[in-house]
Image 1 (cartoon, helix red, strand yellow):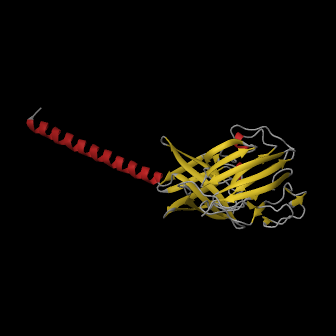
Image 2 (spheres, rainbow, N blue to C red):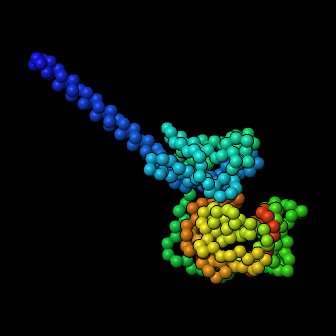
Image 3 (cartoon, rainbow, N blue to C red):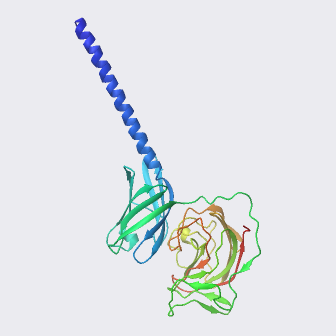
Length: 326
């Protein structure tokens, strides 16, 4: 090889090496940018879907499993469920809720972008109309120190529905007070206490009829299940579980037609459930709201509400709440 050819080869090699290095750096920068864009969407989100008739609370969690995006969602009803598709591209989020879960002819395709600290998006609802929706970062609700408790409050007077209200009027299926107990109507309205609470201890006694189903919503958002018809469903759907999130352990035998008790402590988003004197959930974190929640504003106080829209009849009595001091 002549000297000139040798020098030319060296120069070309250096040029190619430089270009490759630049390409690698550019790829690394692009990957880093994509990673930062993805990271901005990760975590738990409290959603509000704005349909033509009303606002629906919902919940979303996006996570990374290695390099693979995963998402689970609580829709307008039901429990947390994994989504079949979630994508983040060019700072744009897309996820899909299957039509079977939405009582819809078509899958619901959610689209959103980050605007400040919120997700702002659209979806074509089951009615075919365009809905808008927003997502706010779910609060940690972490507490410091040990709460001090106020005086207990009797939420149900054993006589009438004073301080309680149904979420809708349904004379054909209304809550009743019978022999000092609140009786759920079965396929009727939910019954909501008119007070608002943050952290609290709740004692409540219930008698679940055969094949019946109800629930106790804490702050109007997190359902502790009461049932005698969910044995075929996952453990978190069974009596004493936080619906869709936390299974009771151990799970006590069903006792339809017998009086039982819950002693529930909710501090932030950490819950303890004692069923008939036995701890079945011990200071565990509730990740998000239950379908059917009154709203998705987890940072706010909320009421106790009793589910009346499910099967059969469940009676409640001795509903005593002890709020934490502010």
